[in-house]
Length: 101
Image 1 (tube, rainbow, N blue to C red):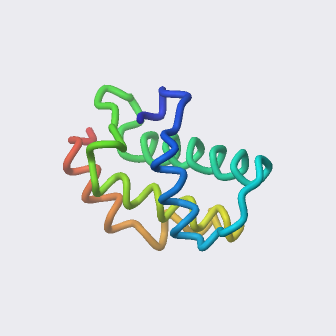
Image 2: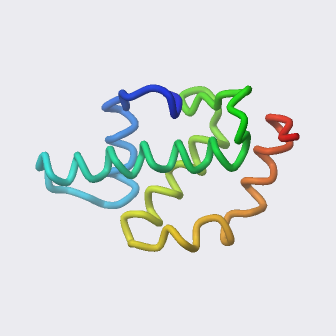
Image 3: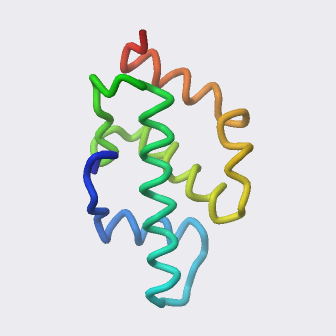
């Protein structure tokens, strides 16, 4: 699962639903969560490596996956503007890991 990939696994969606304690199941909620996941992948990828020379795979990189889960939580609570500032240390670790120029 990368920012270029348009599909999000049902397992990851289930993780998000569990994190957010969403117990109901409806298509509107799932579509909103899917959009937040896609937005989060793009935000994290663009911040970590704007040139996109090293694409983050959120399926295998647990640090990035955890950060994406955090982004979705912020988005669900309509607080995306606080995500970068509150998670700067984690983002910087990913930048070092992926060698941001």
